[in-house]
Image 1 (cartoon, rainbow, N blue to C red):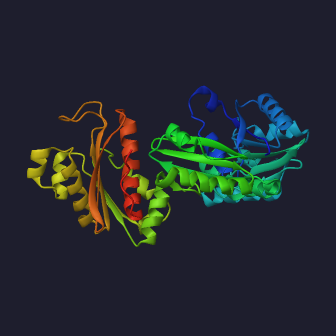
Image 2 (image 1 turned 30 degrees about the vertical axis):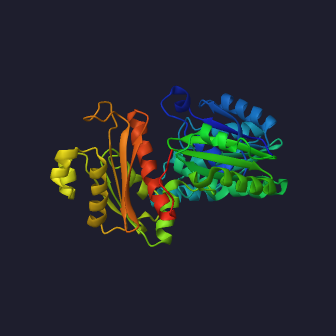
Image 3 (image 1 turned 180 degrees about the horizontal axis):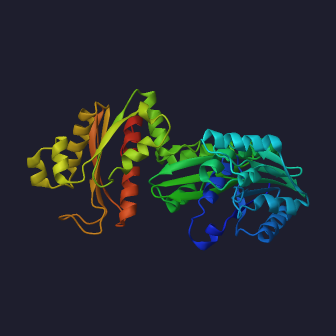
Length: 407
């Protein structure tokens, strides 16, 4: 497997002002083809430091990726450093200068003279198109390594990875037998997954875990044959907790299930405060399956949606019956095939007899109505984030004819 390193350029990364989320973007993108990062280095905006990082990385790795430092300002020095590391000059590419100018014209802005430096290319480098911004990326060989210099703007970086860098790397290293697959698992922690896989034969495959609240990605990397074999074994060991084996996130999987069945969903949220609707509308094409939602944070708002005021007075705003009624009413209100609702206590203070972390999630549909109670870690951000995953997984399971999560 080729060694891959990442150099992230920018003073802001070392000052604490910006979290370097591009590491995760790069790792996830190359992980899909069986590659992984060996080293990540953050470097300040200084040519000598960038040159030193590039020289060291190119002496160790077959592939060196960099993010940042390609813009039009005085602190964008990656082009200069790349030319210095390769021992070549920078030359302005007239065709590229026209591309930069036309991009500014699309924004109804006259191109500043200083911005044309984005068309400066180290001799021997190949520009990488960037339709999401004005600055092109660069690909060039430095010693025995190939360097891909990309913008630091997340959307531009992700687009360049998906459109150019990852396909090129896949084509280059496919002959070497590199493959990767990502299995995603809902509502099971890394330790639970590791225990489930403890007795699974995974010879010739590297396993890596990436955890976010309520969701774990299990990445397999190795030869194509070994990965295919391991994939079947891992899926069998994880069972219904594994919701995708192609890296699709839960929101996309649920949207696909709804679309395949001609279904739609609407949501009534209390404890999640709109986060569930945001999750459903994140995937492209969400309008085909998501009907709408309401945030019924106050008790009176729950009554306005149609929940019986007497029930609210008797049971309170955090309750199984109330949550189920919310799911039923929102399903009716938006004419959806499925209604989802959340109530609970995010904290820091209790609500009545309920302590922070107490949550109800309900689903209502022609297939049946169900409400589940969860006791989550009593931290406000975790309660809200995990409740979203519990709600989406409850819908996934009903669509597949599975029981609600039993963990």
